[in-house]
Picture 1 (cartoon, helix red, strand yellow):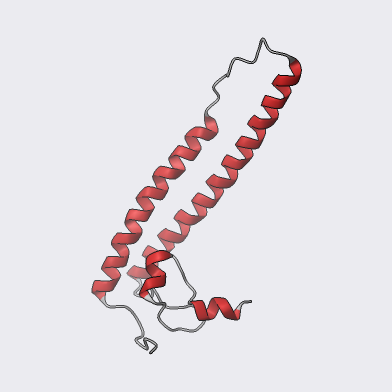
Picture 2 (tube, helix red, strand yellow):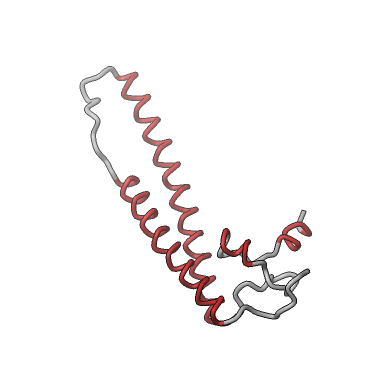
Length: 126
């Protein structure tokens, strides 16, 4: 049986708010670690090794920096989505599917607290 309520109760919203705040704290810490790794310019002592080896290492370093940049971008988007979810909680629109207007099930929101679409709406996009 589908839940036909228009919005979650204040108690439910506060539970989701706590969950999201915890995820934001972890995500901000993860982003800090990614950024620290990105700017880490430790020299691994290849100055006196063969030029070929040094070229391989520089290529790997470039790839690693690109991967860190991608990870940082994803983490920043995740943080933005979580913060937008907090705004929806304050506006009392949190958990309402933006396509169907129905409540997104609690189980989904506990796994993906920044979700704006129900599974029904996601399936309609395919």
